[in-house]
Amino acid sequence: GRLLVCMLLSVLVHELGHLLCLYKWKIPWKKCTVSVFGADLVTQGLLSYRREGIMLFCGSAVNLLCALALLPVYCLTGRGGMLLCTMLLYAGFNLLPLHTLDGGRLLYILLARNAEEATAWRVTRFFSVGVTCILWCIGAAMFFRSSMLSSGFSTASSLFFLSLFFIAALSKNENKGV
Image (cartoon, rainbow, N blue to C red):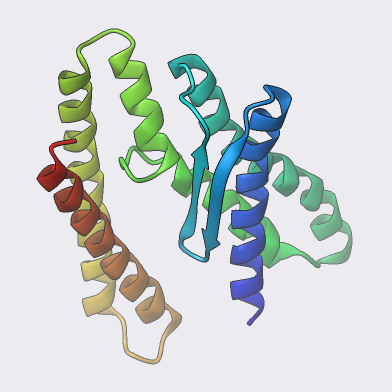
């Protein structure tokens, strides 16, 4: 219960960071879908690579600012630790170079500014596959080393199935020729 609420708050705060950039630039957005697994934000019109990069980074930056604001509360009262951790984890996880996350898109933008888009996509896909394999291996190792009743089992299961989600997303984009 509490973990789910903290995860949803972290996602909402993250998306708020993206929306604040769009609001500042007066760029309307069409749709924002939020779930525990993340969110999808669709703008009306295209952003320059520079603006998109800033917008992508602002999501994690707002998570980090909220975590920083929660730190004194946690240190003084011992409360808010779970929310503090989910804010930090969500910020860090979103910056991983996986093409379905902000970090993957940031990597693509940095590469596409100086190389052909096809090359940028291939390099981003390479990093996505590499990081996904690492997540899968960590999840599988934790899965096989933990008992079904331990918290390590749920963490391992999460990493294992999350990596399968990224593999499916990679193959979906591969079939589209993206």
